[in-house]
Length: 221
Image (cartoon, rainbow, N blue to C red; front, side, top):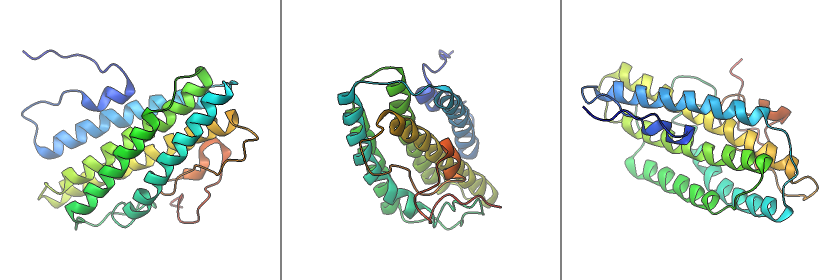
């Protein structure tokens, strides 16, 4: 019988085993549900963390890597809006071409590479770093969930999977917004450009920040 080990961290939660007998729809639904639950734990931790003072050099380095990651992610989220509407409406069942999805995947991987080069730091700094890095992990799973939906011929199963991809996208944007808000608190007075991302449901509610783009953050009401 295969070994059943619990995930070591929220970021590893998406790698937990799915029964081999599960069909494609069950596999994606199970995987996405586990990661959304783990994301909620991360978001609660970020909300509860105090704004601690971290070493100036560490914060500056993280801000630079976060800016580079933001430049990769923002175009992806804007491009996704046609296929995963940020207002919560039903996504189209007609999928975009695989080359476009590959472009999303590559950009998200590059963003993760930028944040992976950020140095370690104190508790408040770690909250910002993990919030940003966790957002990239969630968006990567969103891309793979969307790609997996293309393999589902049943319209209801495909629609359910696309809605899961939308939820993962929303969780990613919220996690990024909370991490960016924490980074803003640590980096007060640096005068750096805003790092909040477009797209996702209720983006502007995190940390009391309003979205910096009129194209993102629909409330759905």
